[in-house]
Image (cartoon, rainbow, N blue to C red; front, side, top):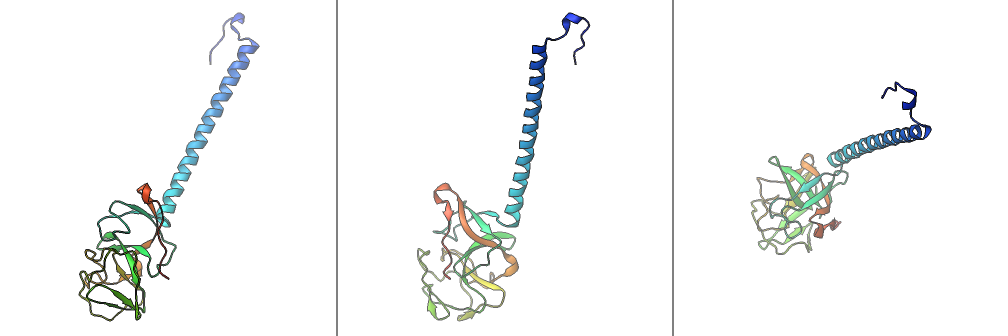
Length: 199
């Protein structure tokens, strides 16, 4: 703080009031800036925590889910939802994160004919999300019954998808499921909720 050596150097009441107001304004500004920064950090931490624990975002890679999902599309998953028939799920396979559609759950019996048409529990599936049916890479015997705590999954691009039809992939165990895909975030022209399951 400045030292005054002479009486005539002392500030006037008006100068003193202006200086006091300036300091109050600076202190309010710094306090507001600090509070804003803290609030931003808390909100960012909460968003990251929410994303990691409950609603992870996943980038689509490859073409196995076309025409429903495309490579580099970003989708949102829910760890709180239990997968149902028809849902798209994010799952871990060989340390990779994949997206596939649940076709059958524990206890369901499947049959797939040479044309790739799927029959579940004696009923031919209506699969409007497919561009075409195909048997694809399939080496399991039908009829096939899904075991307990397992999920039979297939990609929507049946010709190229490697999925539960192949014994090396098999049915997905509970612990390998990250979550149910329920919304598309990017690109923005595909932003929105995905279609619900067939249950």
